[in-house]
Amino acid sequence: MSTPLLLGRPRSLSSSQEQCLKDMWAAVFILFSTVEPINGEHNNIFTDKKDLRKHKLKLAALLNKKSAVVVDPAQDKYSLTKDMRDDLANKDPKDLRAAFWNFVKLENPDTWLLRFLRARKWDVHRAFVMLLSTIHWRTSEMCYPKVDRLAAEGEEYFFLNNDEEFIKQLQSGKAFMYGSDKEGRPLSYIKPRLHFPAHQSLETMQKFTSFYMETAIFFLNDYVDQGCMVVDITGFSLANLDLPVAKFMIKCLETYYPECLGICLIHNAPWWFQGIWNIIKGLLDPEFASKLHFTRTTADLEKFISADQLIQEFGGNNQFVYTYVDPVAGENNLMKETQQRDAILAERDERITKLERTTQSWIAADENDDQDKLKEQRYELMKQFREDYFRFDPYIRARSLYDRTGAINVEAASYLNTGGSKTSSAEIQ
Image (cartoon, rainbow, N blue to C red; front, side):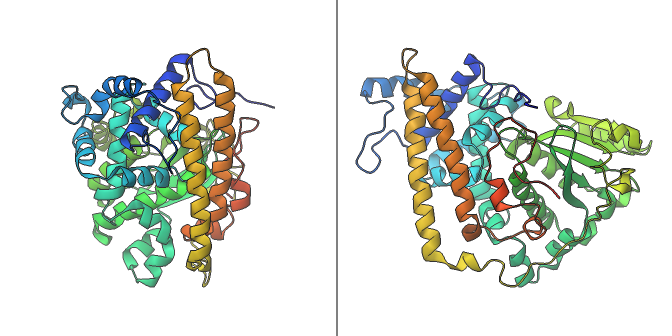
């Protein structure tokens, strides 16, 4: 049975939402300086210098660090505007472009831009500030130091370097993915009772949280573009309370991976947890807070998760028990094949350039042009872009637990869901 896509997604945009997406892309292209010729050929967008000047003026509020238009400080609790200005002043456009496409990975880039737009209620200015802040974090601020490197080197890196703190996070079972809810969204289980602040540094938890989020992206696609999280408060005590980690997780979900969380079920909280909840709730954006629901019983959970998907620990019928599987010798050997990797990456860059040019044509086209044809061209390129990613994924990303257990299946994940079923991009088994 075919189920329609949720609103505000790549294939279900209103005319005003589509215009917001075009404006967002136009801002991105000006940021990357791709309005200039590429490989000696001029792009399709802004072929007239007056047109380019007009569009630059329109987007001055987004791109000019000296602009009088700024985000209201009351709406900028993470100082995102400062991050944007720092990047505009100090980063090479080529580096910003590379960071953007590394961030997109296998997903439809429209999906990511729409997440930022939905998170900022279709305010293009605020959404663009948020996107640039995310790029800033991924390239400058992350303690590892870069999220892309964290994802690329993966679990094997921490075993080879005897990083016991990080390895214990993987083995503990305090956070893992398994199954899906009734909406087909991949399930994450978080168990705060297994976390003790004194047992690892904040830096380790930031690395672990970021790595977890980067891995979770592989279970999303155009149709299933959000996850479901179960936070199990059973057995939780003040010895487990770690507000700095909670704040970082909230910032990731609100700002760096916006709209990736569809619903969060806070399960079996004791009466005294209300005081802690009042503190945490004060840290949350109201829109984000609306996604949080309290559950007490198995019946409460089964309103969102079917019994065959809910693990037995929570009263369901699924017998899954989390067990960490160590990296296997040789599993990342393809990452050493640098010549083959570089050849595939060159093909991907050509695909990106073609996708950028087609997108620029779509932006520049007026109402009299064949918009539907351009949309379909873009969509086909998006599908090819995703499929291409999985050809070179083994050359650039170390295998994770979910690769070793078959939950992330490169061949299965190369399918871009068009809404015909509620299948995630990789089945969590």
